[in-house]
Image (spheres, rainbow, N blue to C red):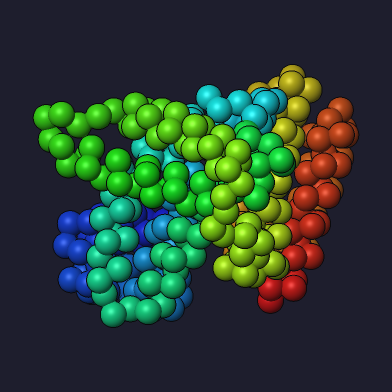
Length: 303
């Protein structure tokens, strides 16, 4: 991302935490980041869009780090899931995103309320998908219910633990406590065959095209990491490794952070990577290229 634009995001995030979203004016952001009003509106159509960019910036990092943990691992391993949750919880606490969420919930900004709702639904969908990995297809009918219960359990235990002051519980302990409870719960509802929500509802809550795009981004991140590891092994020169990583990261960012990626540029860089840096990493390159093209097709439908 453009450094100046990222500086605006970082400045606004700090101001929103210090003063509150509603109390922070665009002029405050201009003064803090040292840009003109014209530049601001070139980056963001409104303060609300900037708010969304802050969340998107953090959640893209969370998604990237979560997916990196899965490479070469057993998806059913609960310990990997716990580490993923620890990453998510740590970022949420350090960035104080939950404070901003609470402010938006009591505001009159319907657009931001819908944005927060979508973030929460995406989180539920991710947990539901990981529960299928962990508990298996046979328990799938009960896993949307239990993912929602788990999400609520984690949120409330984290909130009250965080505000317990001297007796605050470490994040990892909260996660393990909730996970142990949910394992018993999943077994219980599967035996009793109790179901409240049909898992197919997730496709109603989140439109299919966006579901597919989200999944495509996840697959893109996996293949990005796999290709970078492969080129790191095959390229003897550290400078070439660094250049390859820069090009791969650029393509991923272009696809995940822009609504209208520059196709001609992506295709050109794919050719450079393939011919100059990934000649000995054909399998990883083919998978990366396939995921890039899938994302491009889905984005074309979104536009």
